[in-house]
Length: 319
Image 1 (tube, rainbow, N blue to C red):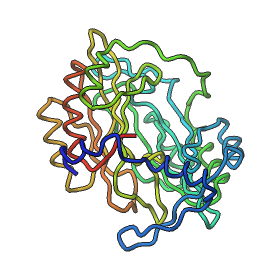
Image 2 (cartoon, rainbow, N blue to C red; image 1 turned 180 degrees about the vertical axis):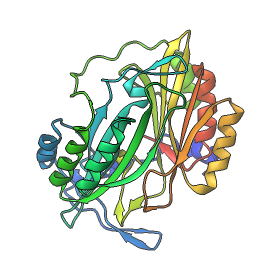
Image 3 (tube, rainbow, N blue to C red; image 1 turned 60 degrees about the vertical axis):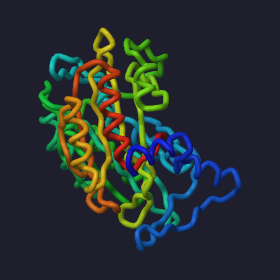
Image 4 (spheres, rainbow, N blue to C red; image 1 turned 120 degrees about the vertical axis):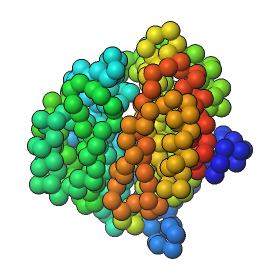
């Protein structure tokens, strides 16, 4: 969907999480299977927070249930002091590891996500994942030149949710990832948020001092025949960290199909935004998805206009 078509749908598309909430409200606890390009794909079933208590116990931290279908737990690396191009990187900009779980009719859960790890931590994390039957599906960078050297280890697993959570805890224990911090009101933003909002045609969210926008694919995505909703990580994330004088450091990723990749790269480069990485997060996703990570430091509104032009040339809706 190109820019003009997307602008007609922005604000009217219904996210999958909202559909799941509606289904639960009307008493449907097992959405029907979906024809994903000729392949039958299972929808995640509706769950409650109580269904995920054993996962929270195994991980040693609780998560958030999205739309009754995706239980997401954050692993921000607040323990690290990371700099890139002179910017002290906040965890919410680039260092937010996570796992997300969904459960399906056959009783099995699917988990996916990524862990932010230092280079010395990476071998132990990889071994812990593999020893627990969790697949390592991607190892790459999300930032350009930075100190200390970090890697993002993406993972995937299908099986017993508590067992997967224990394996992820083993991997986390190979790192110095800090325990959860109590929530606090977000600090004010030294950004022209009105101008940034105008570029995207919608307001962003102040998440701990990072201004954020998210978009979901309009196609239904599936991995190994199981539908993966946007909260599982199949989404575009655009993050703005204020650096003074209404300037921002931007980082995040744009989820793409193959036909969109070159168009988006061209749009980013026209606005002076650097391409950090282009890669896959999964091994068996349908449609095949690519994730493009980006970086720049400039006036926040100018960056927002460039990012909006890039995202509007992809088949997404805001969430």
